Amino acid sequence: MKRVGIISLTLLICLSLPLSTAAHPSSQSGIIQWGEGIGWDIYEPMHSNGSIIRYKLGTGAASYRSTISAGAAWWGGTVGIVENTALAVGTIEAFNAGSNGEAGVFRRSRSVVDSSKHFLSWEMELNTYYGVSQHTVAHEFGHAIGLNDLGDPSNVNKLMFRNTSSTATTATAADRKGAEVILGIHSTHTWGYKYSMTLPVGLKCHQQYCTVCDGFVPGHSVCIYNAQNICTPCGTPK
Image 1: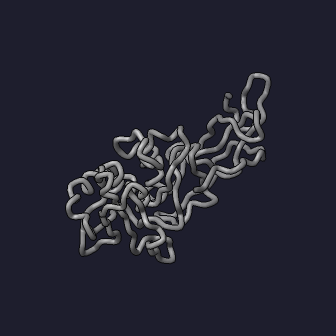
Image 2: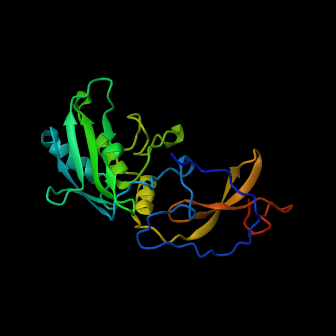
Image 3: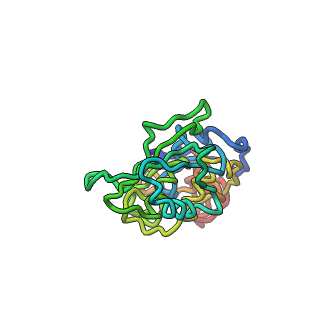
């Protein structure tokens, strides 16, 4: 999982930066940072191409068709996820993997991507030992989109939180922001400054971030304030 790294303390003038990307970029690396701190995390080496994802039902999955369809609908309004055997990129299987297995698994090791890191095929497995829930299906579809698991307790309310203690009942705003970035739906960023605590410990800084997706700009922070607690380089109050 990619983490938000140590932020450079270089002082910046508060100018609009020309950091936009193509309609469907293969990479956001170097443009924005993501991770637990902003509530979504993308996996650039493997992600879907475009906002329509097509799957087919493999071994054992037909019995859970309605639940799988309902889980796909959790992403409605951001990503269209539909059963379409003829044009399917993904395959979903369901079988009893026992109590030692996870409720759902996205098999990246069995998936194939092209030179742009777009899926040519992917596999999802649902463990019927636990039953099959819409939540599990929707979470695993998040991996098909190109999202990573989240593990910090602060993200327990997100769909992409890594275990069943997640309290999400749909793809949240943060989950959707990550999906929009990795799919290229949101690729032209609008910059602002957000106050936050950063390293080294105790230093208070404004970090430049995208006001739409919340992703931070790597290395862009300002950490000097005047006596009125106004950020000297950008004029933003603490």
